[in-house]
Image 1 (tube, helix red, strand yellow):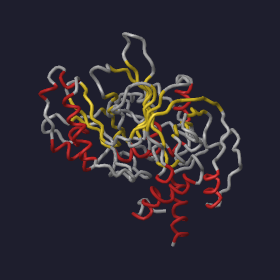
Image 2 (cartoon, rainbow, N blue to C red):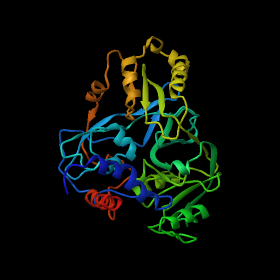
Image 3 (cartoon, rainbow, N blue to C red):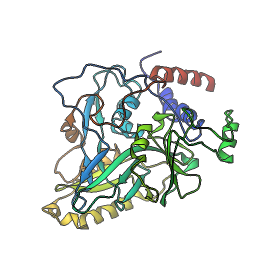
Image 4 (spheres, one colour):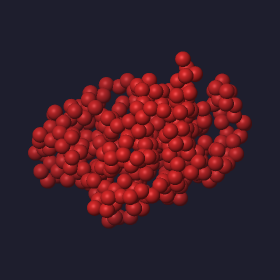
Length: 389
């Protein structure tokens, strides 16, 4: 097998072959590298910071986390790195558009977009941003305590099985659930040559994983997965998937009755210190709204908000060239757009360089037993390409 993916093979990997394999598994998908191997790290670099839980001043700040840069190892894929840093597939691919997702090559600098502009929504309960493919949970805090947010990447419904937008709530929580596929899901699987039983029992092959938060919307839930590399992709039948370690992390924290708000916000604006940030994600292919008008309205709102009147924020001016650069090439990177003459590359050059290892206090333990290697995936894609000729 050659070391370079052809354009056709890359397309099949990302949109065709990967999609077909992910979709055949009901509410699920797959992929990645075997066990997280110990590898020498540059001791001069600091440890990476965990990127899932933050405290912030809700009266002043809309941005949490820090941008980080790591150096890829020989056997890394971007999918491996995404899970290591609690990111989804599309997040890390968008942040690194010039890097081959399956063969990034040892020594390649990889942007880790672990800085987040919070969604424009009430900061209570769970907020899911479909465009970002990311969940934000705002636990209740006592008076006088800073607000907390716990954020994790998610997988969402594909185009023909959209995850709905709007308000709902958690109605029940279950460990080791059985999956009862709907008649339409069973019909689809049978048509694809992968018939399903009426009930899929609990276990390692259950597409719902080991934890589920059931919603007031019938047939929809937030749950784990038996195919972790589907996180950050549109591959479910409308449910919201989480890495197994992430759903386990919040399962005990989230009480029944917690409100859940699902939004679709590809362009996020928010304040941090005296700077306005823009985080732009690729617009979902079935989202036909006028996003230029929506962004214009969001900018006006951000500049007129109570936060915009704090300190010297009212004097901040938009760097139009940088804003245009971000909008033309959305890279899921929260970027300060009120810093004069700043370019995106200059901002990336300022990002913190850290070790390519599991962050301290990460939710994941690095165990990837039983998952497919990148080499196996490419071999299967080659076979699929031959079959399609």
